[in-house]
Every structure is written in C-alpha cells, then in structure tokens.
Length: 229
Ligand SMILES: *Cc1c(COP(=O)(O)O)cnc(C)c1O
Image 1 (cartoon, helix red, strand yellow):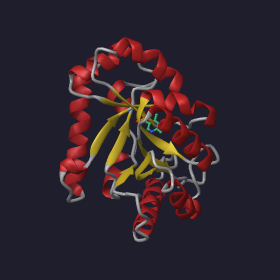
Image 2 (cartoon, protein in one colour):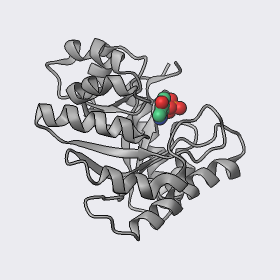
Image 3 (cartoon, helix red, strand yellow):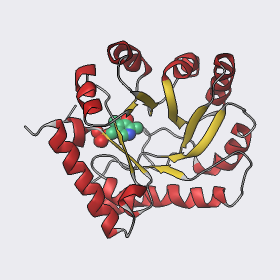
C-alpha cells in the first residue's frame, strides 16, 4: 500500500506530465483533493502534507468532520448537489460551491449569505454528458442563468464545473471537456458585469490528463489520492 504522501507525489507527477504534453505551465492547474468518505484523521495527514482545500459532496459529512479539524487550516469546497433547504449549511461551512445549478438555490444562498454578512465563490455546474444521472445546468440555459446570478450581490461566479461521461471511450470523455470550454468561451464573450469565468473545474482521477489538455484549471481528485472508496 502506497502512503498518502507517495500517492500525492504520483498525482503531482501526472499533472506535470499532462501539462508538459499540453504546453502548459504546471502551476496553471490547481489540485482539489476530494476527501469524501475519508475520515478526519486522513484529512489531518493531508493537511500535514500542505493540502488545505478539500472537496466534499455531502454537507452532513462536512458537519461531522469539521469539529475534529477545528484546529487545522481546512477550507471546505462543496462539489455535490445541494438541496435548496440546505443553503444555511452551505453558508455556514463552505468557502466555495462548485455545484450551483439552479436559480432557486442561488437565491436561497444569497439570502443566507446576506444574513451572515459574507460572500461565496461559486462555479456553475454544467451538464455536458448525456447520462441521466449527471446533474448540472443545460448549457443552452447558461446565459440566462448567469444574468440572473449576476443580480445576486453575495454570489461571486468564478467559472464553470462539469463531470464528464463515465466511460472508457476517451473521445467521448474529451467531448464533455471541449463542450464546457466552448460554452465558457461563448459566455465570456458576452462580458456580463460581475461574472468571471476564468476557472474551469474539470477532470477527476481517471480522466484529468484529458481535462488538462482541454484547458482545465482545476482537477478534483479523490481515489487517486486517498484510495478507492
Ligand atoms: C467524487 C467526486 C470527484 C472525485 O472522483 P475520483 O474519481 O475519486 O477522483 C470529483 N468530482 C465530484 C463532483 C465528485 O463527486
């Protein structure tokens, strides 16, 4: 069994090689460790290795682990779907939400954030895969959605996020990433005030090299770092 430190080194090497292939600076891709299902002691070890932002997909799990890590510098990044009635928990725990996909949630969050006197960085999750199980906003609805979110004072849109098709067909996976980048470019050309779309969160353990080739600025890596779930 490799240690967390060894797996982190391997992931960093994979990122460096992918960046080299894509003629990109290795510093242009941020690693977001996804710690879901791994307990606080594992996260504590990761903090010791210099990791501080962690992706989680369930608010309940964040609430469970947060007290055990209150003495650590940990930032919670919510990457899973959020029910509208859980806006309060997002405002309480998350430094960032990468799975914003509907206006009801955006409005509920804005209300809570105003109550708490804070802002929240968000990425809009876009559905780029035909799979029924994948969530996210239909890309055709992006423009209208961005214009509505731009009116909400506490939400800071920083970019887009997607989950690619789960498939061995690398062409089909790549198509998802190309779709996200293409829609980002289209939306960026509209220059909507208050909306920044510099960040593209795409790529996971099994497909991040392809995502990096297609312009990902942030990869969300769980199993390759922490082991299988
Ligand atoms: C679990 C998860 C990941 C990480 O998946 P791995 O295949 O373990 O790297 C990335 N993004 C989201 C939204 C997830 O839920």
